[in-house]
Length: 234
Image 1 (tube, one colour):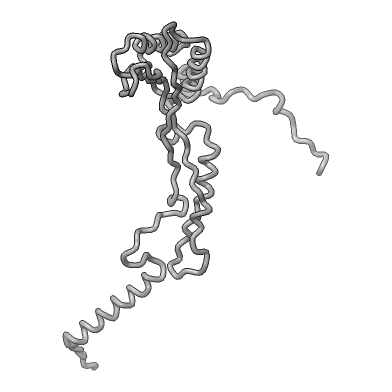
Image 2 (tube, rainbow, N blue to C red; image 1 turned 135 degrees about the vertical axis):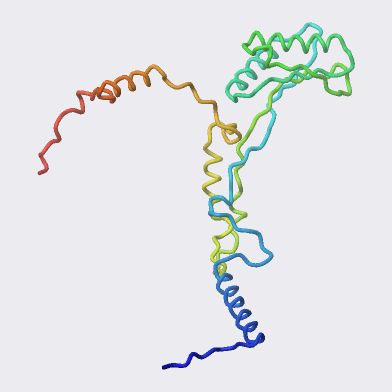
């Protein structure tokens, strides 16, 4: 019969063992983790860079004439309206110089009328005043624009040498973001997605009716693709 042996450890021995285990854990975690005091690395290299937009302004200045808008000024407003529709902006802002000059005020309302004639709804036109050194300063008309920001990846290559942190280089993912920013057609899609068109409820009702009655729910197969596969290569 074996006699049980009880091992009694002193507090000093237990404390030394715990300290050794903790030290080993820190060494192991340091091989693949983030060093103390450094920022937390992104989850993936692609998440280090994100698409961003830079606000801009498409605006024209129209000189104030006693005779009203000239032909070239109306042509410039028509071109502005075309760019406004292409950019999908929210509204056009007209700014008249402060100073209560009646001719400048008439010019601002003349610009508004020209924009409405060009197809801009009245609720999408805003008229305001701006502080100008001359009461006969030009009348401004324009809208806010957005441009995709293309990062300069040449300045973010970082150190391509060996590293013990197992982290990717600082420039990994920059080229993908730069290519997307250069190719995107509408930078406003980066800020918010476009509104979805309503679904085709009529077609959905037909599919459900066919399903309930046990009929095929798919569209009829085209006769051009109903032939057999050629066996010439067998």
